[in-house]
Length: 348
Length: 143
Ligand code: SF4
Ligand code: SF4
Ligand code: SF4
Ligand code: FES
Image (cartoon, rainbow over all chains, first blue to last red; front, side, top):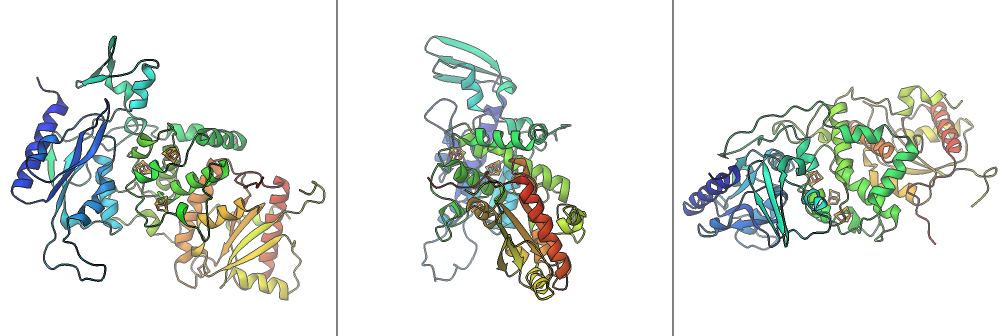
C-alpha cells in the first residue's frame, strides 16, 4: 500500500507534468530530495521530465513562497531597468501551498510582491512536518543514514541500529500548534482536504515566558540567542523578508553593528521579529534553517498572540482583509500610552 | 560612569513637530519647570518613529526613551499616529517580553497647546527612569 505522502507525490508529479506539458505554467515550484537523510531542497521543474524529481514528505520544511517572487521575475523576458513591461500575459508558475504557505502567498499578493494572475496555487493539506533536530536528539551519538517514512511512524537507521519512532512525537513545534493546516486559497487541490484543528492554548510557550519576571525574561532572552552567529539564514528563509536592503545592512545610520556582541544580536532579533508583526504565519522555516538550533520563532509567535488579542487578526487568513499594521481603528487599545493610562500623574 | 547619587538619566524624546514639539516649546515659553534630562529629537510625525530608532537610542546609551505625537484624530497627516499606535503597542509589548524594564520606553500624546501636560509627562518619565537606574539592557558598551 502506498503511503499518503507517496500518493501525494504521485499526484504532484502528474499535475506538474500536465501543467508543464500544456504550457499553462512555465515552472512548477516544489521540492526534490536533498543529499542527506531528512533533507529536501526547493526545486523548480521547468519541463515535464523534470517533474519526476518532485517529492512530498515530512521534511519539506522550507517555505516555497520565499522563492516565488524571484522565480516569477526570472520567467519574464529579459529587459533593461528602464524598458517598459512586455505586453500580454507573462509566464505563470505553479507553487505547492499548505495552510501557512498559502497565507504567506496571500500576504505577498497584498504587499504587491506577487501578481495573483501569474500564480497557480497547488494546495496540499499539511500533516505536520518533522523537525530533524528532534529526530537527531533521539540518537545523540549515532549517525542517521536512512529514514523511511510511513503514515504514522518513521524508521530511522544507521550503521548498526534501526529504530521505529512515532511521527507525531517529532513533528515541529509550529506544526503542533497549527490551527489551519489546509490552504486558505488554492487553484488545484492535491490529496484530501485538511481539517481545522482545535487547540485551547496555541500560545502556551509564549505564556510561559510572559509569566516570568522581567529579570528572568531578560535572562531567557540572553540565553536563547547567545549562540546566534548572525548568519541570517532565518531571515533569508522567510517569505516576508524581501527588502532590497535589510536594516542589518544599512550603514548610515548603522542600526545594528556587524558583530556577535549580545546587544547587536539582540537588536537584530527584536527588529527582525518586529518587521514580521501581523505578517508571520508561523510557517517555521526560520527555525528549521537555523544552524545553531535557536528558537527565534517564539518572538514572532508572541507578536501573533498580541496581534490577535489587540487587533483581532491572524496573518494571511483573510486574503480580502487589509494587513493588521496597514490599517487601524480609531478606538484601538492605547492603555500603554502614558497620557491615556492616567499614569502621567503617578510620578507627581 | 557617575555614581548613583549624582547620576542623572539621559532621556531621548522623539517629538512630533506639529504637536508635542510645539507643546515642549509652549512649556518653555510659559516657564513650566521640568527636569532637564530630555534630549529632543524632532520628527515629522509619530508615524516616522521606527523600532530601529528607539533601539538605537537605547543602544547608544539613552537611559530612557519617550515618543510623543499628536492626539488621535489630530495628526497633521490625518492617520500617522493611528498607524503608529498599532506598531507602538506591539513594540512595547515585545520589549517587555524580552525583559526590557517597563518604563524605559514611554509613549504619550501631547498637543501644541498642552505645555503643562508636556512638563508633567517629562517629570513622570524622568521619575520612572530614575527609579529604574542607569540602563544596562541593550546598551552597547565599547571596550
Ligand atoms: S529583517 Fe526586516 S529589514 Fe530585514 S529583510 Fe526582513 S523585513 Fe526587511
Ligand atoms: S518569521 Fe519564520 S515562521 Fe514567520 S513567516 Fe517568516 S519564516 Fe515563517
Ligand atoms: S539562523 Fe540562527 S544563527 Fe543564523 S542568524 Fe538566525 S538565529 Fe542566528
Ligand atoms: S503629525 Fe503629529 S502624530 Fe502625525
